[in-house]
Length: 425
Image (tube, rainbow, N blue to C red; front, top):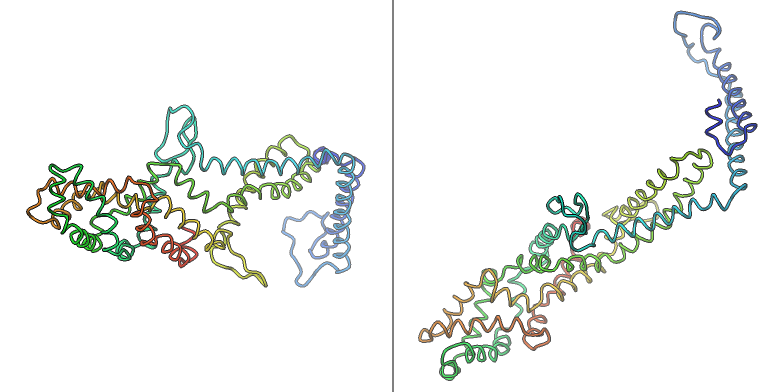
């Protein structure tokens, strides 16, 4: 009893003693009521186990008396807790307030640590591959896992969202040839021996050759353009890019994750305050603070992603916040990819200077008349690489971006994904 009384803390000795005495009296009454159900009295020592008599139950009136006394004891405890709280309300209210700040602060720091620092910060004694935490130091989760995450993203884009043949089939060979012809002429004049003379000789047949070249490129685009390399190289060269994509597409979810820590932390802090009133031990507040930080993150993440499918519960339908915003997220996601990753400049550069560069140069050589020397054909092929370096607002890039329509295609396909597929993205 003394141990229990010392743990009650603010509860007065008299009140706690009365509660324990009442509980003991109730226990005795309950035992006496149940005693008639056994053969032999409790004070008689018998070697055999008590044998219950079938159908024998405590009288209903006595059971009700025990329940009423239990309720009375609970009310007495609640009154004692309230009296203790009223003795110093400001001090006790600081507990849920601090818990709210802890919930908000841990969630804010957690979100920042997802994306920052871009490069490892700390003492680079020991690190593990694609892991943000080193022996002494930290790197943002997204920058640390850029390679793995970008390749998963590439798989989704190439398998479910985009077809190169379908996209490049929208290009008009005549219009693209007209946009490319001035660049090819300049490249031959500047880079080929006797370039001006060769241009004068082949100029009448240059436009038809370019048209046929564009048509063959459309047919064999998958042998010229490595889409996986275009996407993955964009994120691997610039680790900030992948983080920007996630922060743009998941902006509202990240804001909810941070802000929910305030409300969830305060709610959990109320229980922490009640626990402290009843058990004012040194371990209560630090352990409670750790639980507040963990639970607020866990609850917020569950609300963001679960349930994946719309789940009716009575008159309400519940679904994860991210999945519920599929249309809005699809628009932001497709807009970012079309403007920052799958641009005309990057696609043309991959064709002219990427892994399949030799295939493109061989294709140009086949289309150029046989009497034209190789160095002129190579200069003509190099014109495409120079086009890739031109600003995005030049005519050829504006036409290619508009004709491919990658943003609209990606947006449409993203909206058509099932909820589990979209959540995986």
